[in-house]
Length: 353
Image (cartoon, rainbow, N blue to C red; front, side, top):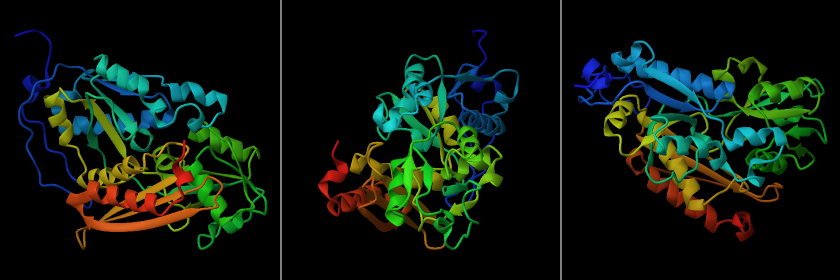
């Protein structure tokens, strides 16, 4: 036997993970499996990415005692093209889209420089490179967007949150999804590109560079910055991005032992919601230039999965929102059918380019 420690030799039966919320699965015993240690965990280096990765690593240690010792889990920061491009201030759509947040991480996985990687699932492309799979989805955080107002705005009214924005207010955002929905509701607004991490964008509002911006509430909560949210926007005001609030873990398809370990921390409701929302995106073949919103929610009382999707023009002149329901087991099928319905009801120019 070689001297390299393995998960199997140190803990043949990792402790089962506890499920959470709707979609909990029964307690399971993970079968014995072998994987050399340390496990190398790839991540972007942004504050939010690191918080999410370290929370994931803590969860994995709870599941598998072998990973609690020494440096059995190693964090590997990988700078992606998306990170490098943020300084340019360009929209992501103009430089290549979602894949820019994960390209270098995928390469590190396939080159076996890392064993798994942690992502904000909304930033992960719907079609992964051959040999890479979405191995686990973690419990979903609140997926709504938060509106952050500057001192130039009026008081926030949860019943009518956009009323706090003065006529002609300038909104900082690089998201065409947010832009289209804001302009559909308030054509008088001006949306100007604002990129950067969460703190950078908060600083821009504090400095008065913009009247307001929007951020994912999930990221603000994970960073302990929720107090900066002036008002949280419900889904009838602003539909979130597909998979917003879900952390996803990718691994190589040819690593069955690791895939089995990661399955122990899977959140079943988050997996179904992610499958539906990613299937909708895949059916629409949406890019970062296409305003698309998606929200799937499992209702434990009825056993139904309700999926709402949205497509729009970036200037807000067209917006279509539809909902479709079905069983949790049919998540991907529901997402695809909803995507087809949205495409059929939209002008062809919505999906051009």
